[in-house]
Length: 259
Image (cartoon, rainbow, N blue to C red; front, side):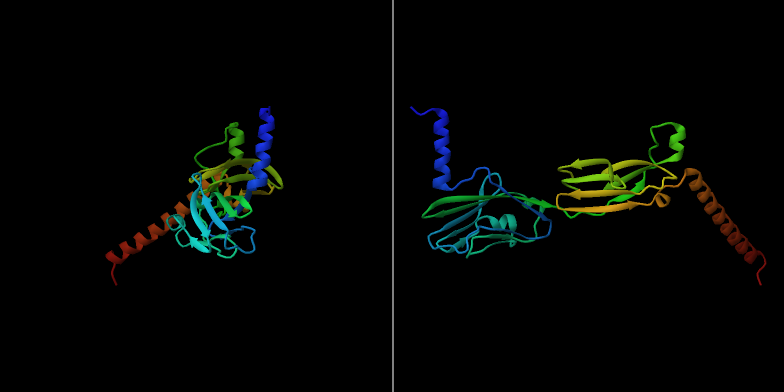
């Protein structure tokens, strides 16, 4: 009698030899939104007796097929529009203007007189990254002592409409803090406390597996003590009051003492 373990090993050997299936082999493909991707069948030329079937998504929906040299695109028009093309010579799948919704598992089934073989592609489409924005967070104060909050500046590094990214603060080449999200389409922000007189170099980086964008921090441009800000605003107010006074005096003088 065959044991359960022996039967399992025999079944796997038969699957690999007869059907050519490698259940664990999945090729990862990463692409930026708006670019194109080609999923190769690895066949240099499709024979007349070959049947090529491409499937997509968790339901293994058929999106393209070659049978006896005839090409059928099934429901691909509804999902991909005119962006999907099937190479009639090699069976490779071409998709242009990639979108986030095109991410997922693509399966290729090749049926020939030698048996059936499979290929799988895990396609990840990443949105194009914008440069992060560094701003002062005036709505909050440092949680430390009053003396510390009076001498520090709380900053926010932010990016909009992001998905599957990491947002990080660096001091020189050292990582200070980081936050990652998988599925999010709102504003993502990461705080940083710095001293007004800090001369170190800081940068904020947003990244995904295939790209990154960096914004360097100029503390003097973003962070100014509140006393300096108040002084600047009072100066601007005084200048505005002076100009208004001069204008009103000129209008009054023109009306009262016309030429």
